Length: 100
Ligand SMILES: [Zn+2]
Ligand SMILES: [Zn+2]
Image 1 (cartoon, rainbow, N blue to C red):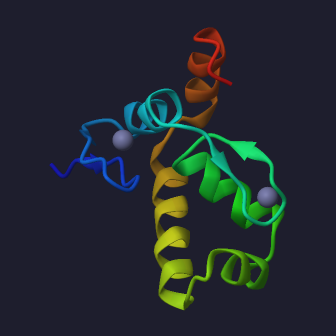
Image 2: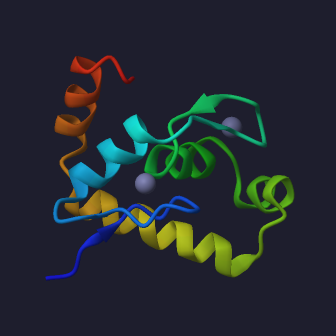
C-alpha cells in the first residue's frame, strides 16, 4: 500500500490515510499566503484547492512562476485527494481543533 506524502517543501511526512495527511498539512505547517490574491490559506491541499478554484491556471503560473508540469502535478494531487478523501470529515475535525 502506498503512503500519502505530505509534499510540503522540506517535509517528508507520510501517512496511511489521506485525511491524516491533509490534517497534518493544515495543523503542522505554517499558513500559506496566496501569491495571487494574498489570502491566507492552510498549506498543502487547501492551498492547491484555493489556487485552482479561485484563480485561473494563467494567474497561478504568473504569480508562482510555475510551468505546465507544475500545474499538472497540482491538478493530479487535487484530483487524487478529492477521489480518496472524506473532506467533510477533515473539515469537521479541523474545526473541532480550531485549525480552520
Ligand atoms: Zn508536512
Ligand atoms: Zn488567491
